[in-house]
Amino acid sequence: MTARTSFRGSFTALVTPFKNGSLDEKAFRELVDWQIVEGTRGLVPVVQWCIQQADGRVPVIAGAGSNSTAEAIEFARHAEEAGADAVLIVTPYYNKPTQDGLYRHFKAINDAIGIPLFIYNIPSRSVIDMSVDTMRRLFELENVAGVKDATANVVRVSLQRQAMGSEFNQLSGEDASALGFMAHGGHGCISVTANVAPRLCAEFQVACLRGDYATALDLQDKLMPLHTALFLETNPAPAKYALSLLGKCEETVRLPMVAVAEPTRAAVREAMVHAGLIN
Image (cartoon, rainbow, N blue to C red; front, side):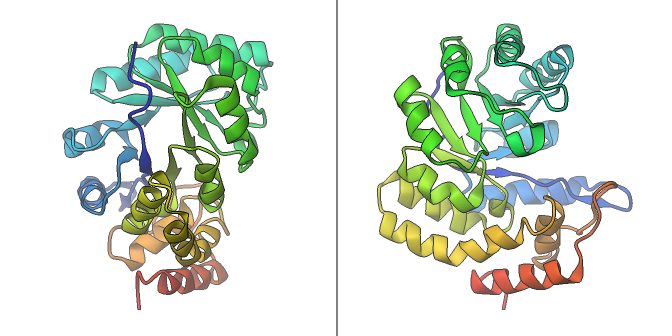
């Protein structure tokens, strides 16, 4: 049986830097080091470089999903062979499987690997919403460890605890509602904001995990404008712009993503000042 409760705290859904039309390996590896030094507890990244650079200092969860079951199995096996600590598998997008189809998709991936598997439930991008009952069925399998829940419905945390118990590892996938998510019994967050403010996000999660919600609320107030600004346009463009202000990477994105417009740039800068990240 795989360890199911070792993924706690602030995990960063790490951006991929580009330069001159290509991946910027140097900037990426420096981001990994910076994240770890700042207190990030795990990374969800471009896999092989991150595994090499993290070198066992924090767990690496590899995004390995697809709306093709065969392709998702191939991605998950590759991630395991590369040394990932877990895989993150999104609910199949576009083709809208039934709940039984979801179960069979994830079971097939579970049966093909030997590392923990996190369900990525994000109805806003994949259209479908995995039910609590389907998650309960999947949690009976050997490798299914938990969920990255991007529904922004904090009640789901309590419903999932009721169905699966506290061993079901629940990670928020939505920064703005992570405070409520943790108060309902969550274990951490796979965060976009942590790209830009890793130390503050790590401190926020530490406070939540020790039950210090007064400190967590103070940190939420500091971070909330950033949580909002980084989603005024589609992620990761605002986060890359913010990182460019910190000198961590260029703001380049690849089509069909485009650089953020000036109103968003102004909002991101203002939020970073509010959080004490820039002057």
